[in-house]
Image (tube, rainbow, N blue to C red; front, top):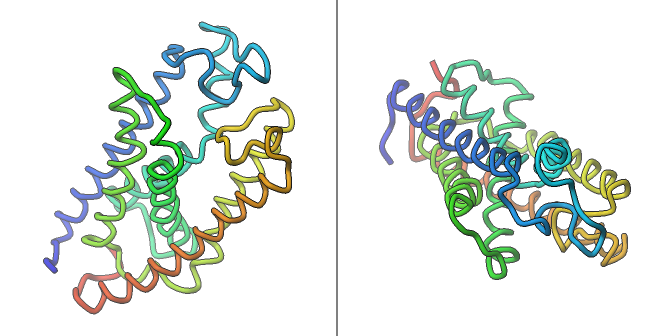
Length: 235
């Protein structure tokens, strides 16, 4: 496996960050301008009329947008890649946890989209670009950049539990907000249609998958570390 120079590593992280932020910016813009059909987002027609069209509904649509796990996973990946590219990330428990979050959460985003959402999802126009960036390009590049540029030594057993804080925070936000707006970002967490036991069970199952992925990334980290001699800290 090739060993990248510090400059090459930072450039790779910069590309990762640029594409992640681009996907997020385009996705957010499409929500702001009301690009999606009225039945899209967190307020399906079976729950009511949905968010107001036009400028009146911008705040509600942005609240919908931030409630998607996809959005949060891409934000985490973008923040981590930006910090690594700029040299601001340090070998601390905080950045270690976020680094593992960026890997696990974007991987879950890609897998859940491919398995549960893509078969019935329809995109058109700019949504094709946004959709590809946030569900496929950013997840793939985030994992690839980690394999090639690390930083090595950040993903370990002690990082697995702290990395659960962000996903659990999203679960609390998503289910709590659902109680208020009576709508959910995904059918498999729709507590109104499925009932809370089923919805929570589905979320718990996905969280379990996240733990398995975290363990897998720790094992990959150890394997890659044996094949490369990359330093633990970007200099």
